[in-house]
Length: 241
Image (cartoon, rainbow, N blue to C red):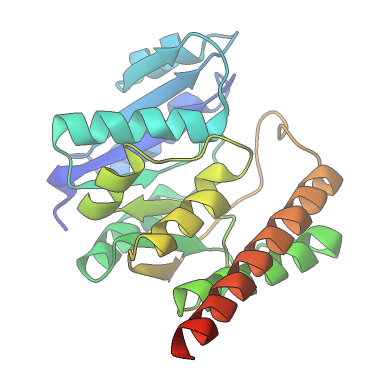
């Protein structure tokens, strides 16, 4: 996958303290890629800082969440004819040095998810949130018939088929950009693969949801996916009788 055909999409909500550094690192590692910052209704100077750093900026009139911001990015990518899109967080958690891995994986897949959980990773998540993530990943892996170890990773790439799909069908609810989009991709027959990446803890600001709230939501999402999986299996058995 040629870097010239890639768009780096950065959804950002009140990230003026980190956005310029993220853009600079992307430019360092992929100087020929387009960079689009979707300013998700920020009340600080995120848009101005991003523009000064050299990124294209689309500003939404109010905060719609990561899912809505990424839907905007996919619409932009489709309209402008990009053949690949990579989602990168604005808070500095994702390492742009891994962009090549995510793009290279698109030669064999429609979506490549950057996984934090591999032998060389120093990233750790424990407690109920980790348990919920494991169950959720097992459910998605079963649906996709391939290993998905990090279903909530937002560091991922999308090829032409995924761009076309997500430009018209992308969930905007919490974790829709991660779990929800993978579920939609699986139902539409897209090929999903993983690539090991480095992720850091947020350097500036704080996450929009606390760990307990995230764990509860992940648990609910897991139950919903498992119910869908069981229904599909039951339907499959019924078709065979």
